[in-house]
Length: 324
Image (cartoon, rainbow, N blue to C red; front, side, top):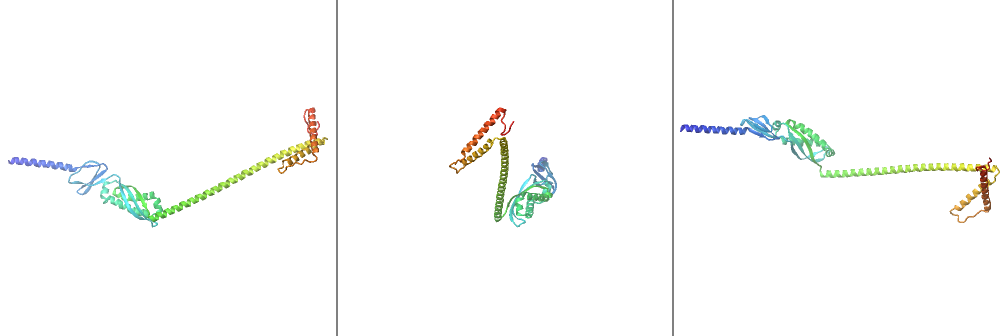
């Protein structure tokens, strides 16, 4: 019976030892998910960092210290009041994007990493935006974001954290200040509209003056061309008159009195034409010497017949008063 008891106790002890071993093995197996990293502490001291995958640690001796998310994370910055350089009170909020680069530093270099990043960002928002005027604050958000990113990223570098982006979401000035800005903007736009309208009138007047100038130049050129043409016509008319006068003079000098009658008849005919073409002339009075006019015309006819007769005998018509 004692042997049976000893055998039973031995088997129970062995079975218990096996169960304990299996339990400890399961305690030592650690699975790390993708995007996570675990720190391992041995008797409270950091020893290593477990990357994603299956790992085995010493049970009881080693334990998991911190489980850190290595993916990029987003942290909302709550709204806060900021006093600008020109003493304007504005409400500002934002957002911070950060990523843990070194798990051991993020776990042991700072306590409550997200709270530290949040307070650091809010403090630097007040510092950066407090050094700027309200107009700069509203128009230079990219500059503000860049300055905040440089300062906060440099400050969090010892914590094993990379701040990838800081964005100011909303800047809310007081209501009375917004109304003043709206009135200022309206006045500025009215000013630009008046300037543009005045500039338009000015350009219109300039274009009108240029048009009148060009018109006057073209009109003057037209008058000059007309005068030139009139002078040329008068010159041609004078040359023809001179030629006729020369021919008549030669005819008179040759003893042909009919050439004088030609000129007299021409002047009579022109005078009668002017009398007949007058607008206020309803009754035409013929001069007493109408028979003389007819005689002059008859003399011209005889002169022409004589010229054609000589031309037929000589083969060509010669000028009045000239002899072959």
